[in-house]
Image (tube, rainbow, N blue to C red; front, side, top):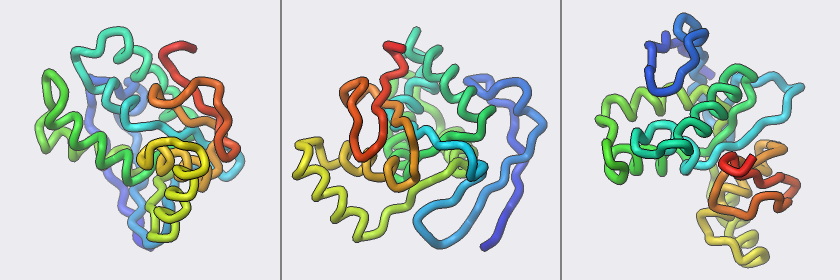
Length: 179
C-alpha cells in the first residue's frame, strides 16, 4: 500500500475554514475499501445526490443542508462512499447542473473525497447487489449503494432517493432535507 499526502486548497463551496491547512491522506491500495476513519466510529454513507447538492449553486436550501452534513462528516472523520458515488458525482456536476464545475475542479473534489472510506465493488459485490435488487425491488443502482453502505459497516445512508427511516441490510436510511 502507498500513502500519498496532499494539501487541500481552500474550497469556498463547502470546506470548513478549519480544514484549510490540514493534510488528508489519500490511500492507493488494492481491495474493496480504503479509509481514514478510526475503527471506533461507525461510518455514514453519502449518496451522490447529497454531494451534488453541496456543489450545485442553484440548489438553494438543499445546498446549505448538504454542505452542513459534509462539513460534519469531514470533522468527525466518518464520511463513507463508493466508487459508484464518485462516478455519479463527477458526471452530474460537470454536465447536469445549472452551473457545471470544470473537469479540473470536479477532479480536485474527487481527490478530496477519495480520502473517505470508499467501497470499490468486485464482480461478486455486483452479483450480491443484484440479489438485493431482486429481494427489495430497489433499482439496481440504489441496491448497489445500499449494499456498499452495508459492506462498509455504515449505520446511516444519507440520500433523498430512498424512504427516510427505512432499515435495509442494517443501514438506516436518512434524508438530510427532512431532518
